Length: 179
Image (tube, rainbow, N blue to C red; front, side, top):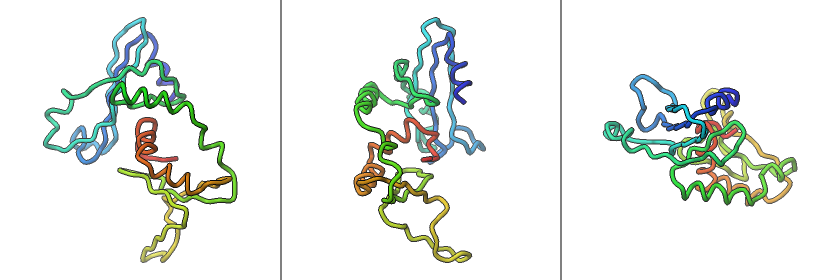
């Protein structure tokens, strides 16, 4: 995907708007998260993105008229184009660079469990979540993954369950898979 992104960014101004599949879909019969790419030949090579749009069916007629874009040309992230909604979010993103990365805390004996396919929020916990079905009985759901940490599992649980982390997940990910 990064090769395609690099090709799309050459000698163009690029506008990308992104759309969820719930509560309403962008196109009838298309059950996919979608992005619309608009390109204009330009030597400036600018990139503008929108937020990740979620809307109800009755607002479909207004959706495309309400799309707003933010210039993210200065933000360089491998394999990702942040889905930002405002200049304020861009400033918030720039403040994130000051903090250490979670991967510096990985590989230890403390375990945090999290659901790897969040939809509207992320579920992380410092205990094994209960899951039961008629076929297999009690077990760990296949959607629950483990993080092995050196220390501070409660802090990591709080961070993963925060609105700020969910925002980070939405702007950088495919909006489906946490890992």
